[in-house]
Image 1 (cartoon, rainbow, N blue to C red):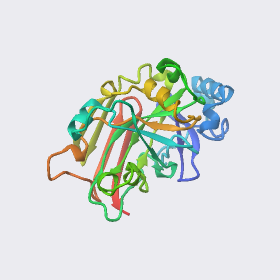
Image 2: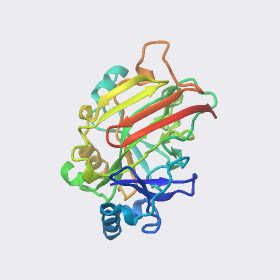
Image 3: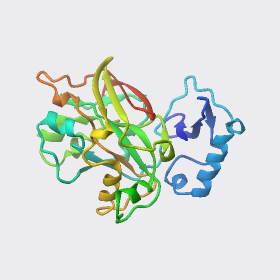
Length: 286
């Protein structure tokens, strides 16, 4: 299923994109697309049944309708740094022996076509297309990657926008360069895990002003999705609705030769993960 949330920011309603590409209203069936729904097998079964006979769901006019983040009330966003062999190589970093972790606050999340704000004083705002994993079952101390994949509700396209000077040159942790307002566009869809048989076989691409900058595949991940979820479950409890950004392939601005083409107001970024939908953001000054 392709689940999404549509409407003005803070007032989104749940929807479904049916097999014919028609947008359908789910608000008569479920309250929201969130951790409560993803953890409720009976509610998900009702949605799946409706998806098989979508004519029972009212159609929505998609023209002019904002698409919001596909998951509401996100508990936490855990991010994996340097998780692609080619990205580690372009930054001159050693291959990490264990996953590198940092966090993004849920309030960084915006819709897939919402404006991204270049922070005040920023000189090095950068792009990163990523595969996002959405948790569907509470995960604690999982034993294997295979078991971990059974705790995944679905997948989405994520844009891990980063300010490299704040992240790397200003001391402390990476979080300062990762948590600026609007720095995590998510969506358009949450695609349920049953539609993605192999999360390690997904192409990812990103364009800036129409020029292809990133062209990678999740097959190049250092720590695959199942291992990431298993690993995290030994350091924190993962709850339904939590999101994991699993890293970015090569091609970020930071990896280019000088002068590096960092983002500025007026730039347009487009990105996609195959099967998970496409994003488009215009950048403006904060």
